[in-house]
Length: 130
Image 1 (cartoon, rainbow, N blue to C red):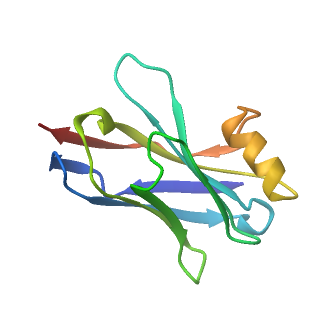
Image 2 (tube, rainbow, N blue to C red):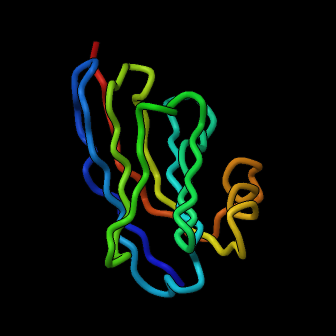
């Protein structure tokens, strides 16, 4: 089992920045595919970034590439999402997730091809005002 808890959400103006954190506990040794998703009101859930913690591989959705950065602390107890140049289109509830993957390609499949993540946080709301 893995427990995930997001923090850092809030309100920010257009062009601003926020940093989300996901506290991870439990069987982290077997769940090295880490990711952030978001869901805006009335829209489907969107995958936005992944980090394969065994080798540091990252991948981003086109909608956030060059603006968002996913990273993990050295102690591996949290992983973060740094969000810059935010726009009202980034308004959503943001979720962190973890899953089992033997390699970065399988992690990509879990996240961006919707194979499914095993563990989810409860979400944190980000609101960007114009």
